[in-house]
Length: 246
Image 1 (cartoon, rainbow, N blue to C red):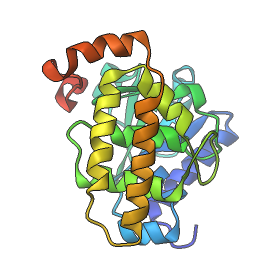
Image 2: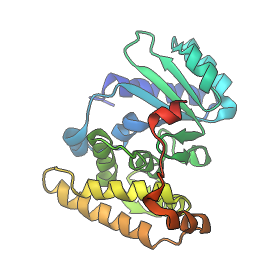
Image 3: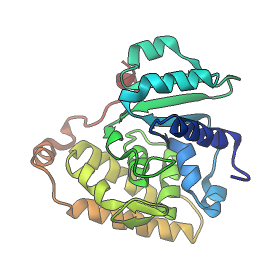
């Protein structure tokens, strides 16, 4: 952890504290991606991280709330009262950043089930889910694209989870059941191929995004996917952040 930003070190510490208390909590988002990244991609794409994203099981939310508050984190009480069944928000003791906790499910432009494989790895959500969380952003920005690039450059497209491995079969299975997610994800893979980065990373990224796009295209689709595909882009297939907030 030498050279890790303070917020990354704190994120790791919180997961370790939760584990010691018998709670299944994993890092998510940019901090999780930084931890999984190589020094080369950290140097190329690393950025300032403004918050810590965590994923926990809904059934352990009360215990997690107690742990965070015992660590000096200040709850955003109105937000937690309104959204606490699926999401919690806390502020750092010095108010320099916040902690966003997703309970089993992540819902932004699209919804992802994160609870099913939460214990697959000891520190972060698996790479497949981390990648989909970035590719599901309908109104994607460069930050999301570079985070996705870090994952794809540092992870082999494999058939299982693990360090340096991205379970492409799970990415395909999730997208094969949701035409909207598939559409946003494949749109963003196209944008990734055009991302302005230096060689040789550019060539490697283009190769991996092309390989993943091909796997997504040929994967067998569910009946609900095929039915929604008939409607296509005539009807909006994603939610906006404002709708999710409501």
